[in-house]
Image 1: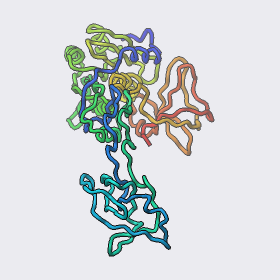
Image 2: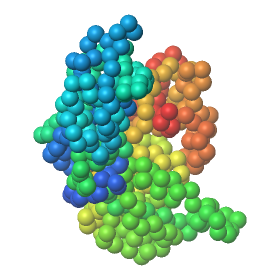
Image 3: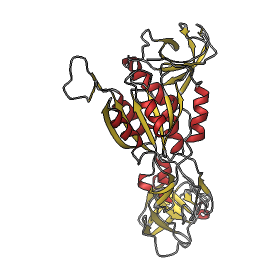
Image 4: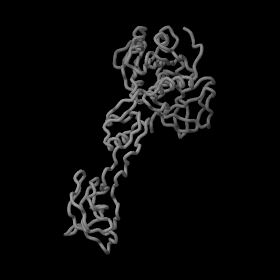
Length: 404
């Protein structure tokens, strides 16, 4: 075994990723399936929304000027001559003294320019009467009031939310151009690693990283291409790394400098090992490179190290390839430190923390294999390489594991 002769700085790794992970080519996707995808081109409205004047209330369509002067002492009467429903307009024209029963979203009849809400009318033998004035335009949705023809509705680079997909549907758009979702292959090494649910030997360990990585990849917009467990067989690992079809290959375990850590050598032989060893804790054995068209990330086998290396490096690449912003998808809070967060100059520290009474304190357990620490933690703090730690009473940015 040998140690790392040099460890790259986190910022250098980010620069390599940002140069290497350009957004993938665009593809059309049905609007029904577009939520969460990233637009590759601006969306311009080809129609007005609404395309016709429509009622904003259930009530009666009238000529608004005819309601002027209505009051409790001077109720004004109207003849009800028909009705208008969504998709079923009234065919005639509203004349003086006329009213048309109308539902929300129904086309406004010709001749009418206002709607009296149903709760402001009284039924009469001849029709209705109202004691309130509703001038022209009242409770009427105008043509293009929501979206005007020719307007840029959504810009390229936007990650589509469900309501965005709804707006696209309202424009009659059946498919939209988005960046292709990165195809991600997960390769889990280690003879001692056993799939959950199967029998294991006394000194074997269950595979925690696979489920974690699959969830992280899905969160970042990646599509699982394949999931392989190779043990420590160098040929199996080589085949898993070099097989075509993936945009990103995540190799869990075997990333350090031990006799069974084959992945770095195999990446270097098959392509480019750009970085191996990073000045951070945990995850110092992390690395990255390229084999063929795929970016390859070496993730330490210890679960917390694997999580940190994915979040710092591989996840950034997955997000960029899919057209998303590179930043972590974690909400942030600025909080006081209750108890010192210890670090050392020369490395970045990924420190799991709890929030108590509005203040932050580090978890006592911080080992790279103690994955349960991330479930007990509310989030994490990143201590920069030039700092020896964060003193009590200082303010610090906390990245929260949960969105709320």
